[in-house]
Image 1 (cartoon, rainbow, N blue to C red):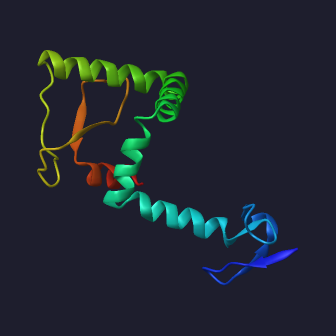
Image 2 (image 1 turned 90 degrees about the horizontal axis):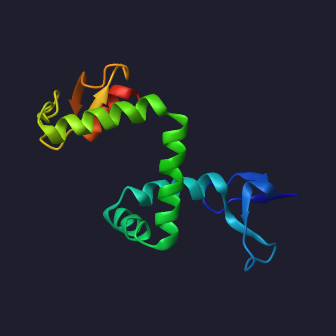
Length: 135
């Protein structure tokens, strides 16, 4: 069985639409791809960011963040150790936080090219860090 997406006007298989009890055929009238696109764009707005900040303060949000953190630490022990060492060095004054090496933004984050050298970091603002990593 196929259905046409209200947003992109493409006809797709019914399993490409989320289940929605209030729709006549039990599926949402916008395909999963269009929904993901809409949610992604909304999360970049100020309102979307505020909603996310508030959600992570709820018990469910805190639990999800905790699960994500534990999973990251388990799957990336070398990265986690490098982050710990660098953060401790910043706190003790051995490593001084610098502005972005590209634009000079003072709100910069550290980047490790080699996690076996935790104090060898480059400083990037969020935008340039993502560009540098190719995201």
